[in-house]
Amino acid sequence: MNRLTTIILMLIVINVIMDDISESKVAAGIVCKVCKIICGMQGKKVNICKAPIKCKCKKG
Image (cartoon, rainbow, N blue to C red; front, side):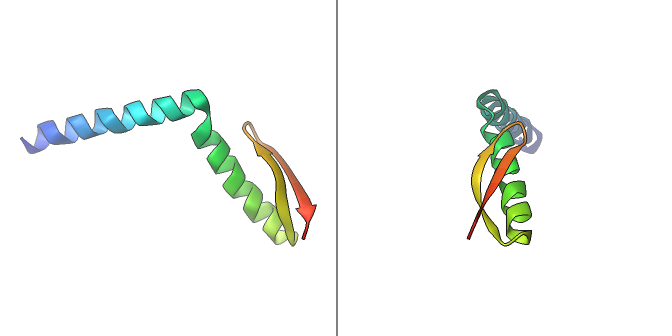
């Protein structure tokens, strides 16, 4: 029972991830987090962030 539940959960997670990757929401989310860190280190805010890595910062 426990093994079956684990397999079902894994299939659901894989399905959700594949849906997100096809819409590239996950990639964009990761890129935006990296952008926030990079811009934050420069004392700026994120202006544009898109996947694949396209990041532009703006002042203040």
